[in-house]
Length: 300
Picture 1 (tube, rainbow, N blue to C red):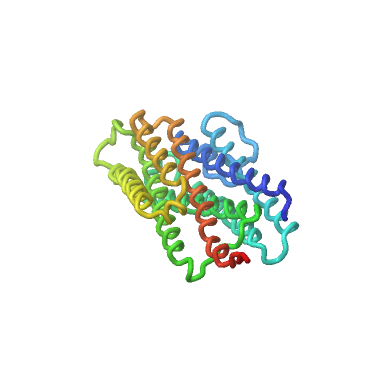
Picture 2 (picture 1 turned 60 degrees about the vertical axis):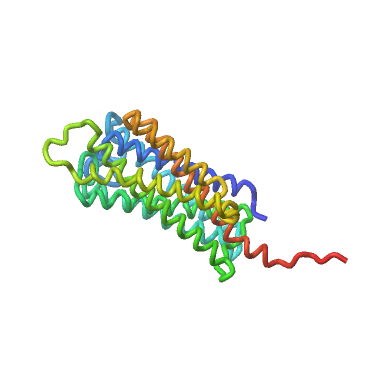
């Protein structure tokens, strides 16, 4: 059995990365992405710039992102030290390292290409959801690492689990699509606040803004419909429909209040919680065939 301290550390790394994601939202919402200029990994050509205004916000995010990378690296080392060859936690930790390096490289590309601050180019509109998908991958593999460190068995992809695989795949694709459209909507809200002056022809981002709430309502209705009719899916999804409902409510409140920063962060935090919960419950569901296959003791 792995040390409980390692499990606690893995949870800490996961939560810390959620904090990094929220700080990234602060950078986007405040238009501080150009706070360090076209400079990476430094800031205005130095590693310790004067901390004021946009520079302080952008530099703070870069600093905690660097800490997150180190924390994941330490997690990889610790997992390799206390597990044997073939342990699934090694796969999770290794993929976490790849994902967080990917986060750094995507962030560098965005900064160096100047797809930040008030840039409304098509390239930025494409880069934002792609960055978000990589972030979801990071949270997913960190969650699986915690699951495996805590004693969770290896996931099963046998033919017997085909129905569960379809549920997991379908729900996962839906949540990723929802998150990606949410990233585009958040970018549109930042660049083109409702009621603001578009100075001429309407930007295509403002028309894309409606896709996210429509998709959210569709997925929420589908989730509640499936759960109400299928007991097996209720076991798989667990509290996910309730969390998605809370997420939807927070989204409505966010829009009604004019997307202030605190409601944006609340909405994003709930979205991350939904995703982490979904990954955890999916991992549990994909181990059910292994437990079901174990013969029950026969009484005399």
